[in-house]
Amino acid sequence: MVQTAVPPPDAQAASSTGPDGVPSPAPAARQNAGRKPDILDGMLRFVLTVVVSVGVAYLGMGHRVALLEAELGARPPVIVVDFTKMAAALQGQPNDVIETAMGRVRGDIRRLQEGGYIVLDGQSVLAAPDEAMMMPAGAKPVSQPALQPGSQEKRE
Image (cartoon, rainbow, N blue to C red; front, side, top):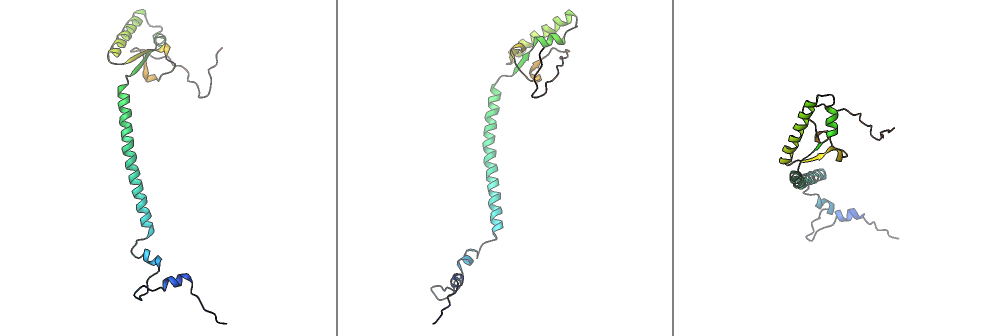
């Protein structure tokens, strides 16, 4: 019996000859002949992806921010006048001081209205930041204990 040795497939590809009888390199060797290492390709792709993503996000968010600024500019500012808190802040003052302070508040309300503000009565407002509250000049706001998050005020 005669046995013939068949070379492995990689050896066949490496030993194959081209049309002119010159041995041609293996397909894997032909692909990598003029290329740099794959790490540089991966890093370049990553950097380009990041640059393009940041550019697109910057352009998109710039447009959104401009729209929000235009919308906020179109809304009139709001101020809350809470006469109950003002009265409590002026408690113990002479009547002429209270009348003068309240007259100033009424004048301030007219000027705010003419300046484009929306002036709300504090009794109609459920919640507002302290910056939106109007107090008469020289009056000290009455401090109220702050509630802890999740707690409820006890009523007797």
